[in-house]
Amino acid sequence: MGPSVTSVAAPHGAPIEQSPYGIQSKKLAMWLFIIADAATFGAILFVYGYLRIANPNWTRPFAFSPTIVNGITMTVVLLTSSLTMVAAVAAAQSGRVSGGVRWLGATILLGLVFAALHLREWFAMIGEGWRLFQNPMGGSPLFGATFFGITGLHLLHVICGVIVIGAITLGFRRGRFDAGHVETTALYWHFVDLVWMFVFPLVYLMNTR
Amino acid sequence: MTAIAARRGPTMKLYVVLWIGLILIVGLEVFLTYQHLPARTLLVCLLGLALIEAALGVMYFMHLKYERPALFWSLIPYLLFALVMMDHFWPDALRLMRQRMQGP
Image (cartoon, rainbow over all chains, first blue to last red):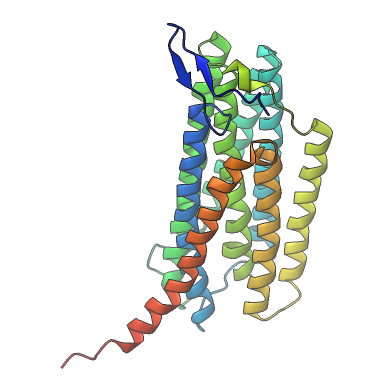
């Protein structure tokens, strides 16, 4: 927690009001984005939940191997990437640029592994005849719409996260970005991780054979 | 921002403990999945565990526990209110759909 001052001096000498939350404005903006995005994911997961429970013909296509095993691996990879991200933030805040860059690189690598595992599973399902509104098992066609819709939106967040972390890593290494940028990016990455903590049980585990 | 930059937070050891805890919760979710519970019961159990994971993530990994309380009170109640309102309005929308009059 910071000291209880109400204003600080701007570089040109004029006093400016300090954030009531004691955080940088970019971090507050990221929090507001995260709350809005959480409401978006909440809405689609609520819709999915009602469809899943209300529909007696809901398809349950996922076998333990390979789908659930793949899902567990993806979950562990994403959780581990959150751990490497906090290590990157800790290194950046203590001024260790090379350490920060290394941990950010590890986070990018784990994000890419997650995306690759996810795409491999998607392509396998598409190969079996799954489409947005096509169910090869003969059940509700809404399964494809909800599965590809929810996991696709999450995958989009992961890919955007990997790109942003890549940009932040380059900027941090060159001294253009500081620890605050790394911390703000980490907030986003942890949020993507948390969303998966809902997607995996609701979309995968609720649909096992 | 240096005046407010000084902050405390969890140690790496605590982060690793949390990481192990989160993986154990995922293991518990998979275990419950294969106990052949009714769909509604399983949904409630999985949602409850996911909420615990989310709370741990938000408070520790996202540092909300170590920020000023004003940030928590400005963000989380709003989000919970929005989610609860969704939960109450979706069933109402489904009820209205069933009440729709049939065409000629």
